[in-house]
Length: 402
Image: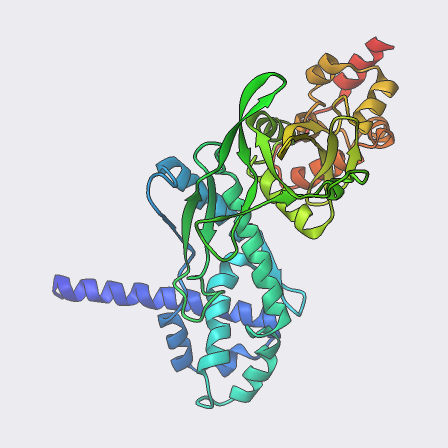
């Protein structure tokens, strides 16, 4: 056999093996979506077409080095792959399909049955009937699409930069968005609007808060907030003003909540749009509650600076100045440096030590109003591989203060 013939044979064998693996994945998807017996209604000719026109994995395209350098691009791709493989859609049968598989194999199958099958194959009407609740025109599909885009948007938050700008991706080329899509997502970086602001007698650079526009890929929808939206009711004019943040505030949030600083403007934009802001009004500032998912982790300290609102800092739930932190101090006598030493002034201790698993500490933090921190830590730690450490040293330290 000649070398060229040998290469052709090897290629043919490998291609057949890849095709069989694809068929196996389709069978599993069919069974998870509509049950047993329907995959067999697809003839070999249809399966070959599905393989030929299968959707590729999500591909990230960066618009220049200014958007992402080599290390940032690598991190972005890796985190996105983890998100897509770790999250899932739930079928109408209660089965789970990862986003990675749904955006590729499941979608090519759905599109084929919805748009291309026609009456050419035997059993066509049965396939259309059982898959119809999943078609792109259904509420189920719209809900899954929205969830997937939201989860993928989380990946943008890690590359927020105070000076370089906000990263956002466009998804108009994805197959979930259009029939025959290339599954490319194009990553852009939106320039920030900054200003010099006098804060406590010093000039500070502050950055304007906004969310990437839903209609224009290279623009922000700036966030404007009325006093009444922050719980300020006895004001002469309920005029909406822009909101800015100090870099200090974003750094404290990332350091204490152990989450990307890019979340701050996304969170502010969401709660103002939804009208769900929860605040505590003080004399010279407002405490705005901050949640990660459903877990309360602290407060943003917001003050009025003539023509703008300013996020001055972020207070973790156990910090002095919060109702929960003040209550914890009264109960334990733990001062600022004590809390820093024990690492309970941020999420670190809750992620490293089995605080929620200790009956006494769990009762203490719950009584102080910090139970959400343990719930949040439990949610994160259940995916961790390392065993949590004993919190005995916290007991020993607190006993010395009595």
